[in-house]
Length: 320
Image (cartoon, rainbow, N blue to C red; front, side):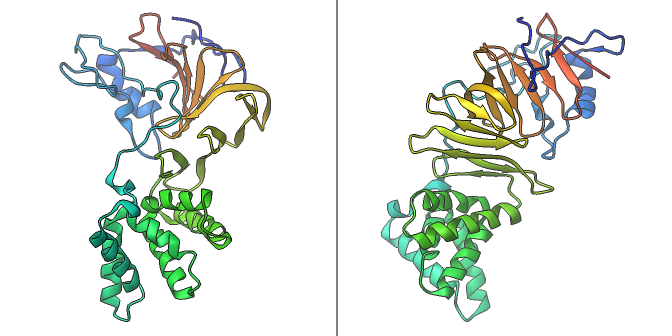
């Protein structure tokens, strides 16, 4: 195991050697490790678990279930990929729908302004079922000269929450008019603030915003250039901005950063200077120190407690 290099603030990460340290036996103590050191606003304790015979880990690999098995660490996003593309029927384009479906969506959108309240409510619910296709059509009405059509479209997009966000990002990046370019970001902001969703993606499946499910405060915001490269990302009050040479600079400190990308879990991974290993700022507040081979060696919890991988690779040592 290689020695962890540096923490997020360039402070050397040292193995814990005080008398207050304890060893974690994965077979016996994983639940207590859970309860004491892994808490997040989304309540996802599954990131730490014991390997069971025949069970599959998060990479789809079958575990042996041997006594003294390893703790499963949340896998990092594979190198070379900035973000995953979510395969989902909700991302089906309006233009690719059969004519009968297009006519039904258009008819439902007209019913959003129906005089009968039941007709309006029925249209609102049915449009949600058409997901991205309906959102694309509604986004076009955001550009309408009719206030009633525009208002009804904006309200319905907000009701649809994260399902409407891909179409809104498309409109922001390829607007039909200056009016749409002005209105679409406002609708997007309203969705982020009012929706119960915590993760928002664009039409290519890339995570663009992550918010705290309780406070609705922004955890991550990411933007991409026309080539698909991450142009900038803001997390923990720091903004990473892409330079002409492909490296990144950080708003709150000096230095050069490489291989900056959004992780599958909505965090941000980066390398400091010429370092081969990387650091991940997870969306739940943890900081992961990672070896070049992808091995997580150190986890710093939101409260500052540190967990280090032991030499045998199967146990972790953490502070009390």
